[in-house]
Image: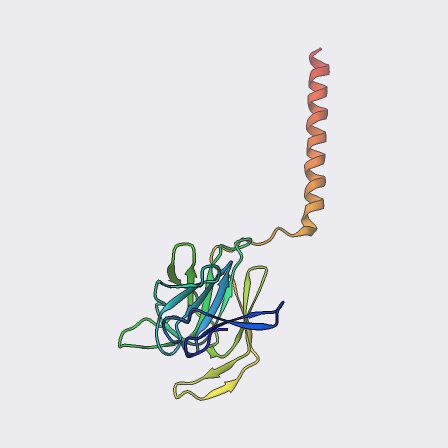
Length: 201
């Protein structure tokens, strides 16, 4: 659990105790975070556009490529590499830090080469929502909608996002017909070859 102060505590469920680890170099508030393998990524927040990376095995922090748009009230979803490439999708309300700064509601981080691209915006702009990933499809659920003066309304909206490079799963119901078709074609080919050889002899 990483707190606003930058403190970094790790809970050991086997021993039921907390361990103090190396503090986060830069304080973060209202940030989004994600875990890939043994690495924790802390993205942005109201205070900065930093990407802070924590290696849980070495207890060492490092900085990654900065988030293009400062994100507040956001959340992340991670694709697995099975049906879509491994990416961290950062959804949230972009905070303009300067005139002309880009405003991306969906930002896609590649942990393999530390790079960012922007994705399609959520149809409904929201804050404080949850993200779930099922078969590499991402769902943004609930939260609050807002208007230009910051008025918030509770939302029960559930919108799904198809990630970049997504390859649909081959439906299991199609496997048996496909197998039977291939088998039948194989039998017909073998019979034709046998007839050809019989005629030739």
